[in-house]
Image (tube, rainbow, N blue to C red; front, side, top):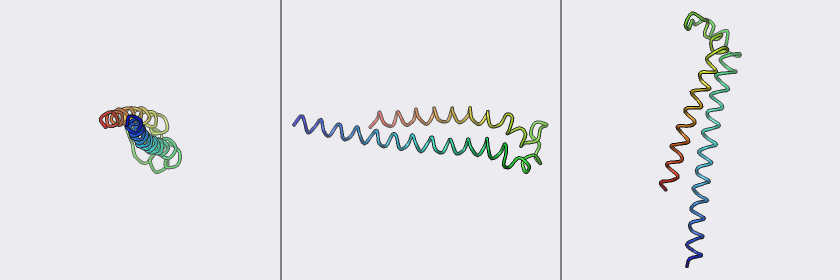
Length: 94
């Protein structure tokens, strides 16, 4: 009986880990796509269109290339930390 109970616990734990890592990889993938779009897309590909807009006295494309992508990266780190803390709490409650 104890072996069956132990096996059930291991199966439940394995399922928790699977769900956790699926959420983690989804989160990382979405955040990396956002980072790529902001740093490469806004700073290089769409710079001509964005330069038509002024932000803080600078052209927006220039601002994203020089400062904006760094700010977005820092915000993405904070979002990742918040989401991972939420995922950790969800797994611990199960």
